[in-house]
Every structure is written in structure tokens, then in C-alpha cells.
Image (cartoon, rainbow, N blue to C red):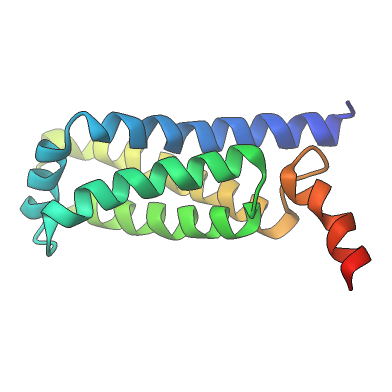
Length: 140
């Protein structure tokens, strides 16, 4: 495996794994997550909480496998950016919380950057997308 292939696989595993584990973890605390969502004034927290968990698991798995990786990465980037602004708005936090929330905000922006790289460059050669590409070309 060359550097490009190895880096793409490891990058997808790390990015997708983050969302997969976060989504699975959310299933263990849906009530608390719904309360947190409600505390930010978002509608339908009882629906949003499990929907977010399902989304993170499915999109994380898709990214790991490299299946529809560009779309998965774009969806996760948009989700992460929205969640970052809504839940890590350090500028509106009490002074004792600002440093940690700013760190979380910046970490999430870096994750969005990685996801946008996947969206721009694709999943790489060791992916479901790459294996399906010859089939799509043959069918055309």
C-alpha cells in the first residue's frame, strides 16, 4: 500500500470512527441529549436526539468504508459546522468555560477541514467508491 492509499484509509478510519463512536454513545444517553438540545431552543428534541445518533452512525460507517464518501463527508461537515456554532459558541459562554469551548470549536473546525478534503478528493483507492468506479464506467 502506498502513502496516498494508507493515508486515505487511516484518515477515513479516524474521521468516520469519531462519528461512529459518538453516535453509538448517544444511544446510551438519548434523554440527556434531548435535554441538551432543548436547552439550546431547538425544536423536537425527542426526535432530533435519536436522528442525530442514527445519522452519525450511518454517515460514520459510510465514511469508514469509503461508500458515497464525498456525500457522507459533505453531510458530516455541514452537521459538524452547525453543531459547532450551536453548541460551542464560546464567545457567549461564561469566562470560566470559554477556553474549553474555544478549544472544542477549533477542533471541530479542523474536523470540518478534514471532511472537506475527503469531499474534494474522494475516498481514495482502497474504498467502496473506488471499486465501484470501473463498474459505473463499464455501464455507461
